[in-house]
Length: 458
Ligand code: P71
Image (cartoon, rainbow, N blue to C red; front, side, top):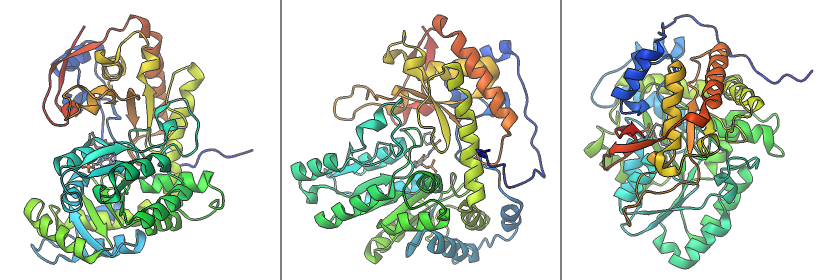
């Protein structure tokens, strides 16, 4: 017998009740929310799969750490714990705490991009690209083509296409490239990993052209599990060792601690270059807070320091990704189209294949998120044309190839039975797909529009 699933390496000690609503109530709630799941009240949600960001359950150790917060304005003891944890797990020399990932993205973008420079990356992420653009950068997608095809089974769909990168550098000159922006795993591609072989090639390319390689380490432990499972030579190698090997190939990283690091709030930046560190440490006091708290309370930094240690334990990562995979294996049995292979943090429903009768301008993925909520009170997130926003050059929508609805699994929160309920609800929505109508956008904010946009049924 092969054993596919690792049971969660914890038992439950405290519970938070959740409430079921009626279909009639949900009709009202979603209309009031402008058919945007970001605008629902969480009290009106049954199973909340909006995001895995800041929604993890902390351990008893982390909660105990919260009581040891040193809330001194400067030089908090918890900062030094956090610094130690990052240095020992990720291996970078200099650390700047931030309130969350986008705080770190803001600072690195400001410090490392000159207006007009290109920023190649393995697919955009919403906040990452926006901060790069606000700093005057021009984002260029250099992910492999396979990443844009939901059905393609490439084991490392997050890989950088070195030919695309080389073509950019040849056309624009290395001096006009700010740095290479590498994410492991790639959120918008479906939580897809990057192979260590690819990072090694990337490192060699960057060295050859004098380029820096900065890492979005937000979900790196999940990437490390895929390397352990799929890359030759890494079977049996501990997650912690793979994480370290990955980071050692890069010049620095930014982090949303709200994912891998198992906290409800927190982030950080870490670099090896002292001069860059000094610049970042100067900017952090302008936008986040003093360089020994960066917008966090001492207790938050303590919880994150402990969470970092827990996040690289093999049993934890195996159970976490295993739960995502469990849901991912239920759906295709019913013919439901999802991004394959299943990624680290979420199941991505392929809304184009789900609703082939809806053109992309009628927001198929947004429609699917609304229909899922209506069916069962499950909250998911649009990751398609609404998320992609507009091209600042032309003002037209970006038209992403991937039009996806994300069922994101929080860490250590739901049970396998919840996953079964989710799968059955997706099936009910799939069975009713032919009579489903699309949406039109009636309110559109300028930045990160998907958070606050409002829609009406067509
Ligand atoms: C996610 C989030 C949170 C989010 C962000 C934007 C729109 C909707 C939801 C945040 C990430 C991320 C990656 C790869 C940086 C951030 C920003 N993801 N990189 O997936 O996934 O971190 O939220 O802590 O500011 O729901 P931050």
